[in-house]
Image (tube, rainbow, N blue to C red; front, side, top):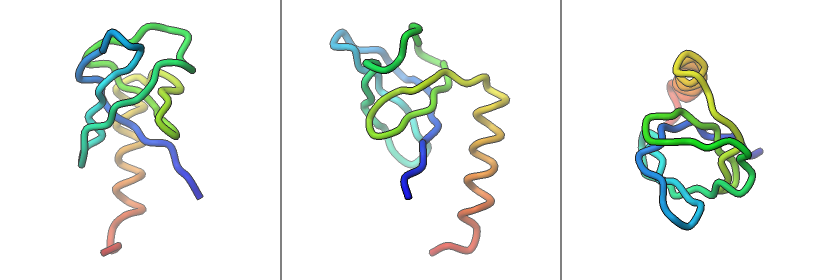
Length: 75
C-alpha cells in the first residue's frame, strides 16, 4: 500500500519542482498536479513524486502525529 507523505517546502525550482523536507529526507517533487502556487514554508501532501495539495500547519502536524503513532514500535 502506498501512502502520501507530508512535508514542508524548502525551495521552489525553475523547472516546476520543489524541494521538500519530509522529516527524514529531502525530496524533490513535481508541481505538475498542483494548480495553486506553493512557496518556501508551505506544508504539502505528496504522492509518487507529485505535490497533490497544500495543507495548513495544523493539518500537517495532525498527519505527522498520526504517522508517528502508527510507526511506534516498528523497527
